[in-house]
Length: 277
Length: 284
Image 1 (cartoon, each protein chain N blue to C red):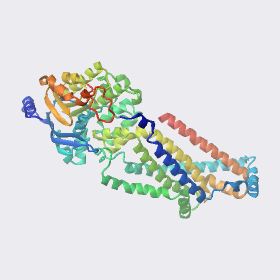
Image 2 (image 1 turned 120 degrees about the vertical axis):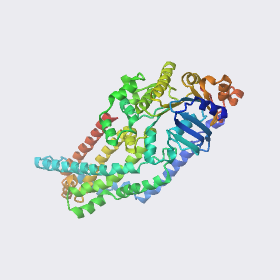
Image 3 (image 1 turned 180 degrees about the vertical axis):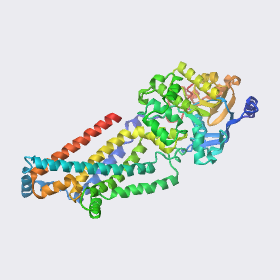
Image 4 (image 1 turned 90 degrees about the vertical axis):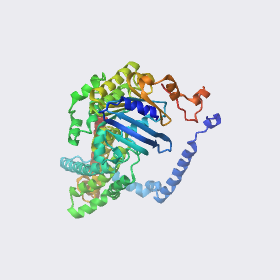
């Protein structure tokens, strides 16, 4: 029985304090190692240079010729991001199904803990996903620009590879985070793993998967822009040209286009979640 | 398990009847080291209807999970529907599992799934993958699901989502899934715990009627002793992981029931304020 003095003390208080102190202790060396120094922003000549560049942003470029170019580049960026995501999904879904512990049959009779050999079989897939996502997409893009030449193909392949790794890992974890009992009940009533996945796991995971996928699509749009700077086509390539020519108005128009694209992704995510949640 | 119980069981068995399942010397210990069941011997012939009663923590759920191949016994031998589940190939085990239907106390149904899908999922063990995927897009057997639900007075909920139902309605959806599965061995873990008395009696009657109609074997764990005695011909009393009695309902004496639920700790401390001790509270 709890004594009153014991009830007064929250047993979780000390571990929490310890975690906070530890987090701060880890953050400090991080700040000093990265040589973060905000004062350079307000240094006289630096601030002047930035001000000149920023002042050229207004008014945004809006001539018909440029807008046509911008539209084409935007469509190309969207196409790179979407094609890259589609390829990534095709790789990520099977990998996630193989990597997840949620559909383990050996875990069925062992209280949710898979047998050692089932761990051993999952590790190669997890390893593959780690390799895929540990190399940044910009590195893949540089590699593919050399292999397949300048243009959107390099961007699509780079996004497909990196994002397959990320999506696969996160999907596998989403499958593990949902309530495992429905799938287990189906498996122990004779359903196969894929049947148990579609009837027991997927209904619970859809909304989270959708929202993460659309967010990743948004990231893919940004990534395809960055890769444009190394010659992988789309808005990024245009922006690189405009920045080199110090055409601030054009840069401003493109940044506004980004804003619209992200807004679009946000709306899409909300629409899909509303429909499937 | 006494010699008496074994004898009474063989009396009831017709000469040409086949065994639905048999447990001999079965024991199970939880991962925590707690002994859940030990020395369990039960034989049941096809078409028998058995209620398992006993105080909370006696091992009723563990016994049902052993019978549903959801747990592997640490000791003893289990044979289900003429097969040895733990000596079979994985494919054969899957086929065996499709013939066993377990009704869960809290049916594990995804909140966003529709009732019709949840019921149709009962036959996944018999359906091919393409057929089950197709049925996910467009329900292939709405009449079958509606029939199963209608027997539980839930036909109007066919296209409702599972998170719109109450606990008792969900329990009935779980039973409807089992009815649609048409298993040879029906297992039910507290199938009526969230229902009102009238509905509980109706549902237990339905389970018994279904078992009789298809000559399936029914094993249900129950907290309500009166319901068990009213609906089931054979009663098994479990206490502390052992079988206390196993006999026909009409042969059961009140003293035996009192012994099954006797609780020394509660009797000695009527206030029962101890939070540090594991209590065995009878809930009947």
